[in-house]
Amino acid sequence: MKKPTWTNAVVYQIYPRSFCDSNGDGIGDIPGIISKLDYLKDLGIKIIWLSPIYKSPQFDLGYDISDYYEINPEYGTMEDFDRLLEEAKKRDLRIVMDLVANHTSNQHPWFLASLDPSSPYHDYYIWKKGKDSNGKKPPNNWTSNFSGSAWTYVKEIDEWYLHLFAKEQPDLNWHNPKVVEEIEKIIDFYLSKGVYGFRCDVITQIYKESYEDGKGHFPIGRGGEHYLLSEGNHRCLRKLYDDVYVRYEDHLVVGETSGVTPAQGEAMIKNKELDMFFEFDHILHDSYSLVWPKKLNVEGFKNAIFNFQKNVSWNAPYLENHDQRRSIPRYGSEKYPLESGKALAMFLLCLKGTPFIYQGQEIGMRNIPNNNPRKSKDVCIKMLYNILDRFPLLPAIKRKILNQHDRDHARTPMQWDDSVSAGFSSSDKTWLDVNPNYKQINVAIQQDDPNSLLSFYKKLIHLRQQEEVLHEGEFAEVPTKGSLICYRRVLSQKSMLILINLSEKTHTRPASLSKICGKVVFSNYPDSDCTSSLDLRPYEAMLIDLE
Image (cartoon, rainbow, N blue to C red; front, top):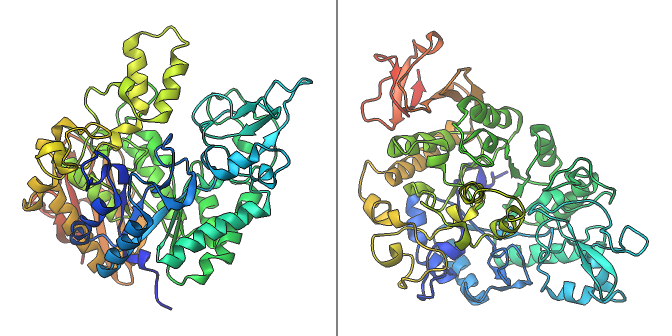
């Protein structure tokens, strides 16, 4: 049986609003994506994941869908999308869409119809009577993942509806078979068009097992024990797979699964609920914190990733996405941006599974300098801003907290060249300001520079595809301490060692690694040698073919 395409592929995530603007309105669009397909093909990409492009009021920038069967007008038309599929196919590229099935927009026709309790659509959502005698208290104490109560009261019908995110994003009722049928129709509609698969948004939260009060006093996500990875959730995912996905021989279903353990994730793969999933454990060990940045805990970071590498049959490793801050300042170093960017690329692209990279990661795009939270387009920051206003915090502290959580850092326009708006748009007014460092960091500067981060990504992606051991081999940890990262990929008699010093200091190899016998086939320093020198320079990374 032919192996799925994703077994030897690197996935490139596009945030359509920020990738390429073809018509000068300051917003990225589908024709803009089409214009860059050759760039992605040259980079070595085989699969493209698009963040939501469906019709939406854009309250949460596409994660609030008002019509699953229409393209958001800012991005183009369904004809544009069909052309994207056609042009991608010509280049042997596959398109993965974002499936947002836990909730819709409150402007979706289903929800508008659900405001009538006698309508069959009322049961498409989770409506409940209030808790106290007069119904003016929420049905339970659950809190939204965006903060505040997870319930909103509608006076006209004297009922509350559930929203695990913003009130503009009401949760669908997966207990209703009609809702499951609707989701299956959406999936089949796009797969039959030629879409390769879906990244499934917050897919481990769709089925609420009960509506009892949640434990603890969490301001965010309280009540999760009643819906995260519930048995009903597993049944629903398995049904989608059996009813729809199984009819398409080569496809990709990847889940966003915050809080999942290796054992839980592996069970979802074995039970044919997902092909792979995103874990979130490694983001707990970096410079991201509530207020003050902290030093990266390399051991914790490495061990979190290795835990999934060792205990899951197929991984979906990543360092960046539309919800995460940029990886060089997060896991690397602004003192050694090129070296650390290459070291992180080596770490990611040599891991077991299907690696995901995010637009701009390949050129080392950064967070927004001197970010002003008041200008943020992120719904999370707007809600958090209102909450922090209730506390007597110094403005500098408040700004620090907001800046640490702002998802705009990853969503600034793609930096193509040093022209107006970094070549993203012909307009100097873009939906989100271009990062001012675009004249120093852009595709055009790095395209023909053999020493650039972009060239490094390109060479390493192609090497990964050529070397069977790198895309099919098993993972074997080599125990190390401190900032040293070491692991092997093994297939039959072939073995490759990945050795990385993820720090700004020179690191002397331990005795257990002092007698490595092999050839350095790829590295981020031009003179890396695994035999004559025991010292690893700052962020030095080597791929060694063991003899």
